[in-house]
Image 1 (cartoon, one colour):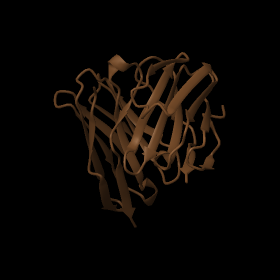
Image 2 (cartoon, rainbow over the protein chains, first blue to last red):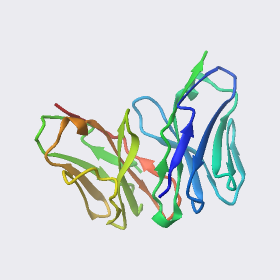
Image 3 (cartoon, one colour):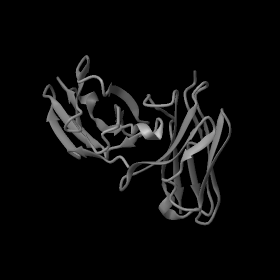
Image 4 (cartoon, chains in turn blue, red):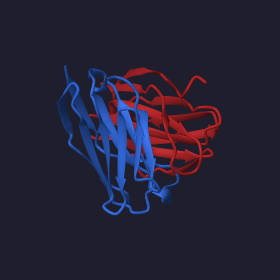
Amino acid sequence: GENVEQHPSTLSVQEGDSAVIKCTYSDSASNYFPWYKQELGKRPQLIIDIRSNVGEKKDQRIAVTLNKTAKHFSLHITETQPEDSAVYFCAANPVEYGNKLVFGAGTILRVKS
Amino acid sequence: DAGVIQSPRHEVTEMGQEVTLRCKPISGHNSLFWYRQTMMRGLELLIYFNNNVPIDDSGMPEDRFSAKMPNASFSTLKIQPSEPRDSAVYFCASSIGLTGGEQYFGPGTRLTVT
């Protein structure tokens, strides 16, 4: 089955700097890769996603890149702000399992002001 | 739309008691997911339904856990008997479509088993 690994487990950056979180997946048939943000005590919420026919997608300060050959994808946050502090989860959708998502272990991002 | 609704929001129970968690998905969504979140194990998928039919229950930890979806607007996750190691936040999520789409999470139920 699909396995998603996420690194780093914690990341601390200075306000205004960039943050990068990386994930690898094992199932080459996976074709949908979302990123969720979870603030303390809240529910996970989708912040950006990418499908396998696209190599990069950007939404304001957030971007995701996908390398299908290497089976890895990354989240890039530029000009980080204190409100970006949260846990970020990557996920992959193994297509043979309908719309099931397999989540990474999460990255705790701390933005220091 | 009110989003995914879960009840109760908090549950404290004693070991051995039966616990029932409830979920109402977003109207029109045809997939429903139950997750468990702990510090140690992260976000685990327990079971998911498509069109009210269980598709994958491989994440259900043991026979003490059961889930039902009697209709498109309601699902339950039951633990009987409960144990302290079941303490976690349980999320319900729903989505639309058959492959690869956004999952909308409910607010979660924080379960504490003493």
